[in-house]
Length: 416
Image (cartoon, rainbow, N blue to C red; front, side, top):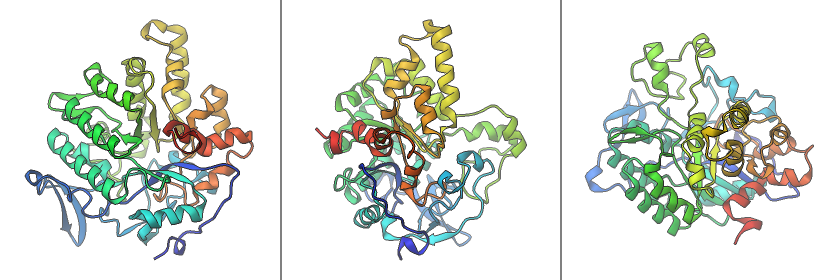
């Protein structure tokens, strides 16, 4: 089955190289289990419930991903929020996903060679490739840090075997690192992925679930890990997923311990309540911790790259940084605006006005496009974002559409 049976493939020839910051793989059924140590056998299972296959983690069925086999998936861009197609961006998903057209998954969603061919058809030179099912792991297994790290290690081993961490200088996969079991375990995993060519890793945008309770990854107790990250020069990927923040909504709605879910069958919070309640934003909290707890000051060469978060958070957060820098500089060891501009890269996800971000003061070489292909909330035609930046100077277009990410990753024209 070919992708173009369900979406129109547009090949674009742009006058610069392109690097998509947000593509996804769909995990095969053995991705979490093939390399799992014998003592953890049964921690991850696929079970049948009312004729549907579900993922069970430590015998608890998860609805986070409606179809964890990915044999059928929503059509890329099927949520209808792509701004290049007249959509309104992530803000229009307040009520969750509606009913969308499903398609059988082609080989390009599962395997590197057909994916590379699809990228060539689309005109994409390079992409970051993020896992999909893996975002369900840490929150579901938060009370067993050793099991969390064992499953993540198994996934990283599968990812390296199946995709490699740098396939044909075109597909850069993002293995995961968890700090749940402590610095030593995380540093050992970091060493393994670095030796195998990883240039970026994914860390969960949430407090770390340790045996001593949840705690920010930016606290000084984790400095031995961050020191090693800085030495190795790996990019710190931060992708949207389940941060566990649904518990704050659940308490007000009476949902108990219902997990975050993208299923259209899940109980949804009241739209009026959501509209009036306080914002609960894990990325803002993570940025506040990276800057406010001084992590980026202690390790100024770290590169934090949050991906697939609507850019609605940037302007109010940047304004807060500017206000606090002017009114209460004593709170920080460095100017927080300068820290943000130095250490944080921004994915202009469904952002209609990238020039506005540049005018705000964010360096253009810290802005990067990403399509979220082939997810339904993303873009069916990734390089269509070139039309959003076409009024910018060519040099700025080149940076946003690929150069910024090439520079941060040290690949392409910036390879050393």
